[in-house]
Length: 275
Image 1: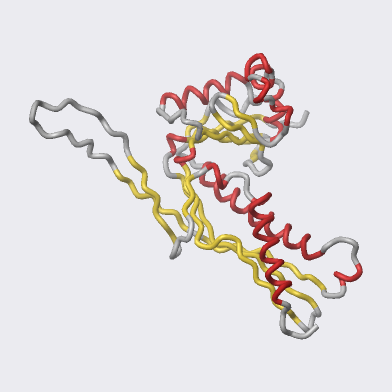
Image 2: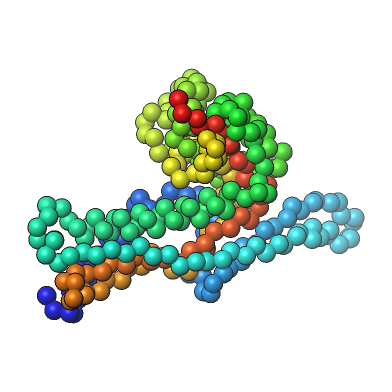
């Protein structure tokens, strides 16, 4: 093969990486405010304060709410995931090495996207629902729901909760979460383990949540409380290296995440000691 790269090879690789990222890369990107095509090293999300309604006298001026507009800066960083694809290896192996590397790069970048969002959620300003001395119980869930209600977080179908797999198993042990008598036949979690709607919230298990001293921290949040910014979505560069007789495949992106409103997030610290 010459030093010039087959354009069909490159285009197919780029398409496969993009599709893999969209299909399996990030679980959380669609659950937060997202801004694309950012130019520069940072962008700004606006945090809007609460307005107050007031009466107006006859023929008087309409009272102004004077909403507080607080800019929240979100810094972007560049991330890369690359690997080699040996030209002759593709002839000897029984699986498609190109597809394997494409998936691996896309999944790595997808995990990084979720990592950025989780880091934004795990802010010191976010309140906790009880402490991490117990597993995820109905009492802890109700305590978190009380915090969201007290903070006037909208119950508009845009609430999300992410928990560890041990906590997902704890939830499955709650009759209120898994019984058709409470949630109806269409919301049973046994139909799949990826997500379930309960208490007006989409609950999802996630393997990348913080774990410290046997305490796993989950999060219950509203979509508008967290921002995700992308300067460049997943892109792929394929170059031929004659001295290695291989293609180097590099997938890359420029993204960042920030906490916009800590009152829209509640932490769910749960004991995850070995059984």
